[in-house]
Amino acid sequence: MQAKAWRFGLHATRRALLRLDTPWRHLVVAAVVGALGALAVAAFRQALFALEAVLVGAGGGHLVAAASALPAEARVLAPALGGMAAGLLLWLAERGRDLPAEAQVSQHRGDYIEAVVIGTGRLDLRAGLLKVAASMLVVSTGGAVGREGAMVLLAAMLASMLGRALGRATDLRLVVSCGAAAGLAAAYHAPLAGAVFVAEILVGSLALAQLGPVVVAAVMAFGVSVWLGERSVLFPVAALTPPGPAQVVWLLVLSLLGGAFGAGLLRWLRLTRSLFLGSRLPLPAAFALGGLVVGLLSLWRPEVWGNGYSSIEQQLRSPAAWSVVALVLVLKLLAIGATTGSGAPGGVFTPTLFVGAAIGALAAAALAGMGASAAPEPVYAVVGMAVLLASTTHAPVMSALMVFEMTGQYALLPVLLPACVLAALVSRRLEPLSVYGLRGPGEPTAQALAK
Image 1: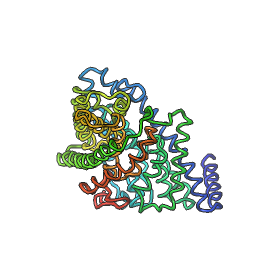
Image 2: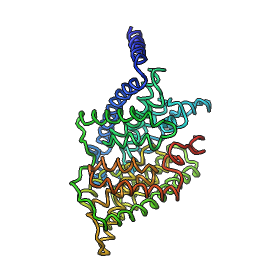
Image 3: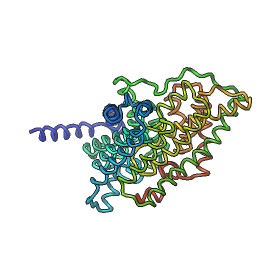
Image 4: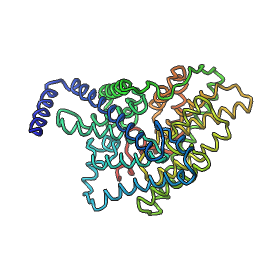
């Protein structure tokens, strides 16, 4: 009886949507996708925080504080055991599963970018949910990856489910794009950046004329997130004084250096991945090894645990001494390489933002030591976050808007935009492939097509 009622409601919804003009139909579906994306992100966040509290005693996602309170043995073993559990989950789930190659390509197993860029928008929901669950295990035990990647994937999967249920009443690729934008907007409290993410990174596979629904989905997701109790700005910072002309010159020099560093970070991530692939370790062993490296590094500084969120907050509010920042940066780069290189699922957005904030802080300290006229240190941290994100994603407008929205520093936007453009140009010159494996907006590489 319930199945009949569900089918009747679904058919009625399809008929109602088909009566609308195409633009209005897309906007209605986008609004629903945005709300669903926000609810998915909120549910994931609460489930993750609960798991972190049970496994490592973290409260509210503060993994660094949890790591500091743990005995040395637990601090070392937790990321390794979490990685091993995640690897076992994926390995056992995939063992004996023999999908034809064409099915694997059409389903796009847990990769929403490929599903939009080179596919039809159809996601393998089973593979995606397994990836989300494995990411929760890695992140909740201190793995040096971002939790936001799984949030965006979950929102995109819900969008794919909705689009498939509505059938020809929707454009599935557009619906999944709306889901990705909604997830990003809800995770980072950045609706404009969520929409521009789709335009800059998926453009070529998604026409700019279809950007309206993506904007609606992102704004709806942000609105629902705030309604659920999330703060509107992810990293609240006291209003910063706009830099003067001499200070702007130094900030643009920082953007050029940031572009080169971002290219180096991309090569570092690919190098560590190739080393793990060359070792031919089973998936559980590879994940465990990556986690063990994080655990050992955390004996020096607990800040290597997690995605770097807590460290970014500290850097923006009460910067540490430059020697501490430099040490944590080196250790964190090793931890990020070990975690992502092992293949453990998770995002790199937030770790990249941490690297950028640290580089900005070190640049401010160097200029202060030289006696140069420099802007306040938080300005350099904010600009560093934006240029590192731009240099790894090759998406300068999205990066500038995201950091502006995350910090609420409207006065810095005229500096962030040119700085991100310069950083992206330098990085693309040195390393043509972005962190997504794309060569330029929307143009898949041979590696992406072969995945």
